[in-house]
Length: 332
Ligand code: NDP
Image (cartoon, rainbow, N blue to C red; front, side, top):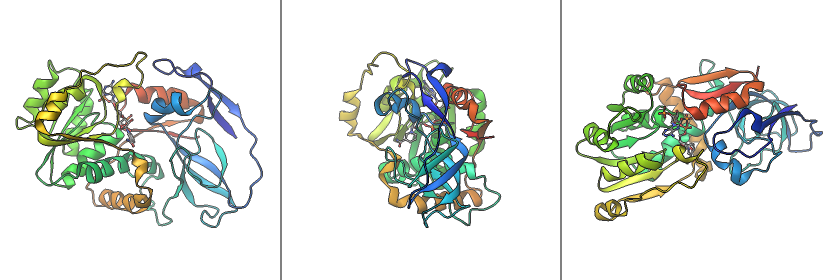
């Protein structure tokens, strides 16, 4: 089996030399265990965020994969079935299915449609899609007619936030970092999209996009954008804090001039969350997302890199955000 390990903790933006490719000998299967072969591996921003807190140098890089069960001593996961497993950057793994860092192994339904790529279990129909769904339903509790703002809107989570908002009858405004992304989000049905890198003022862009302000903000970026968004919230607005991607590669602690007064005066409610909080709902939620996909209510784009040896390069590219579509690596 091949594995990618963390050779050196990241300082600032990760470099390919921070990773090391190794060979691993797998143990014999014990009762309750399965042997997995990775088919697709996921690349996600949280891998940058948690590496310094949860990982030691030399550890296998964390992450989820779609894998095929090659051998099984666990009746829940028979040979030939596919799973989403939190086994890290490995081509092959032996696991008993226990959660790793709150990431759970789940079986992909045996009746998964042939024309829906299995890799979507890592994107629109997997963790990022569930993040969008839970953030909108459980945290923000959006209602028809409300105005929702989402940052990093062209990302795996953001594209799903916007499309689910439209299913729910909300007006949705998104921000993204290139004209290609802006055009794609309009195609997906976003009511208004702007390029946060080229606008003269974030405050003005947010005001123009929705002069009446925002009932809800799905926060993915942190930093200056967060402050500008907070200032445009409507009274009794709600904010779901999902991520802070603009801060993950910072080498010095970032000071956000946090607008306490805006929160206080407008009685805004802000709540952080993690997609792993509702494991009991995941299976049914994936089926809901799959139904929306089959009905044409949501679309999913992927950026697929081929080759396990390209994991670090593809990870760094994902963090730069230059490509459109959920970043995944096909093993061969
Ligand atoms: P993606 O990699 O798919 O997209 C992220 C996008 O963020 C990029 O495409 C890029 O687009 C944008 N971005 C990158 N750097 C910056 C920056 N400095 N400032 C503003 N935008 C930037 O990521 P996901 O959609 O999977 O994740 C989005 C957020 O959600 C992340 O913060 C992630 O950590 C968080 N998350 C949280 C979860 C939870 O359980 N709470 C679960 C999953 C994700 P652009 O060109 O527009 O800049």
